[in-house]
Image (tube, rainbow, N blue to C red; front, side, top):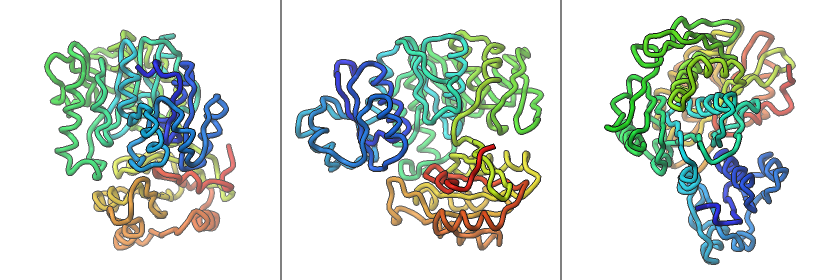
Length: 449
């Protein structure tokens, strides 16, 4: 039980999951500390919550902690991790600690899928909060408002279930969702078949008598002894009907097992959020919340940061949006969203995330920018990888250039800012795409409003 330890240290505390877990432990009265190799604004935020969060390494300090949690990206010879082990501290990888936290709640809801899990998790939390339910949420992003903030208690734990490094296999949820499966993480999975097998293993971990909310195309994942609840646009338990677009957002009718139950009017942009909302409504129903109340709660949902989030405008008048999209499917969805909203040119700025993904999906990356008017490629955000692990951003640029002239390589953020200042105008949409630090490109350029 993690509460048996009164002090805990997180190595890599700047990550979205680690940050969330650190805050949860602090709220539970633990003495919390953390370190990170990047001096981001997260460290200052954690410090404001009473957490000793610092940049770099302090092996001597880490050796004094009784419990140390580290991410999969932390090498075995990390000086803090090595010192903690030598001192006899209990050391756990993040996925094991997340499972330990989940086990202390009466019920766990785990939301998996290649795309949409952060937003769907946040949507379910917003519904629960509107209902006055006691819950703790573990979300892989920051909500724009506070409508998905945890309300405490030990009754319900709502968490993203990430497939990277098979992290989600450590969880044993009572209710789970699989929002869809698309090949990703080529550094972990050989092919789509191996990835699907991991999702099947995840579904098999659902407690007997529980429920799996799943896209109709993936209902074969549902194991015996688990209730299968489908959602989507075809014949299914929760279906979106009469989908309408207006002023950047969508509304739709929620049909529950053929009966039209409610109209859901979303504030967040993008048609992809229709199925995210359907999944959240279906999950809430497994927790005893009727569709009409869930739909009403989602009308006030403001979204998650970096999920087609509007940052403001450039001095040229062009609007700037940011999106965490780093997979070809997600990039295409972001561009499609902009295409519906924008009368001017769409300038897609992409910072590739990892060399292995760029190589494994080279063909898909070339094709996913089809509806963009210009594509600007930034250097790769390497994360945990080396160039020898795949192909570089420049390799992707050369592939794009062979197919379309409207492609340029930007060596750094300064070059990008200069180009955007000279080549955009009012009515254009600039999309900052990627899971790395691409938002930094907007610094000093974007004004609110």
